[in-house]
Length: 171
Image (tube, rainbow, N blue to C red; front, side, top):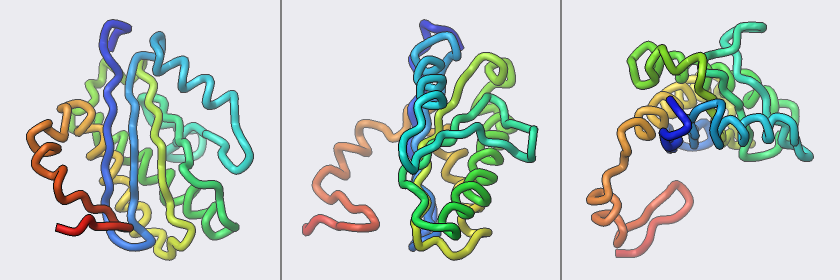
């Protein structure tokens, strides 16, 4: 990637109920605005929101370097453990999957910065489901960012029937 390359922005929602994953990604060059945002977020934690580098194992950060940013403050010990444990592992594995699948070229892994904004429901109760959903949501968000998904036709087609896990517009 280069400074002339626009950051790739992706989104994905995977799963159902309290163990679903909602991921937003921004992938760009470390020397460009994505790198600035990455460093700024890491250096500027706020109450309940402490961005951290996603790791596959202790002292083994995934590449490209991935900043895990929580969308909600931990609501207690169990919720915190779901964020720092299976959600982080899922995000790191999803990034590695994107590299292995060629969605993120290996040549970008040393020069790119990735920000992953991650939602973990405070009611999450199945660590393995949280892991699986975050892994797939991360890989999908990165693929969507790389390919420009969703298409404008798909967006315009869905505009009269918006729906999400919390609301469905009447027809």
